[in-house]
Length: 261
Image (cartoon, rainbow, N blue to C red; front, side):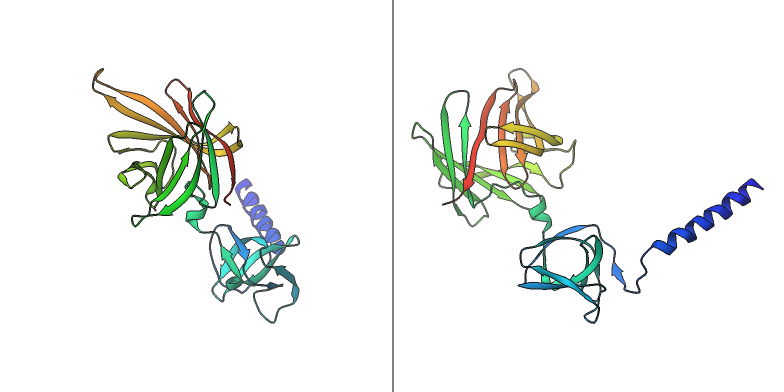
């Protein structure tokens, strides 16, 4: 008897809730929320996914929106003034997966790092990209010593090239994609391990959230054991922001980041 009453009450509740849900005959492709930017001069916002539907307003070029669904007929469902509305999908530019998960240094900026505990600094500026896809970063520290960094990013991960200013000699994978806590891999006789993906790290350049912490290990033939060498910290769309040794002493730290002149 009790089970029957509970079942009836459940059915009534479901019917009541369904009365408040929006009804649409538009067929959509199920998808998670995406971020997009208006890439036309003005995008009309419609009440429904139809050119004949009521116009609610317009969005200027550069406006960022959250897209909840994409219809097969070429419309995107967005939130507009606290209600769902639609814009033509072709009027939007979607943030790619690579952009969302990029940990490569931004080629439009210059980076200033502090080296060690003394007052030695190095400014790295983007140079060029070679045929193997590596970006070259060069600069000089206050002692006028030349520094060169080769870096590239693929669907497999973030790589740094060992070598000099002329060319990288080896690929060393410092981040392996897709990113996952506990992930371990080997590269160039080194072992890397992702120990965190949500660290908050303070540097002289500012405080960075959701930072990836990557620990590096190597086999010590003298002591016949694997030892912890260094820990790297990477910020999304910025790159490496800090490097410490096994005793947590600072090796390098981002001091300043600015737009490239």
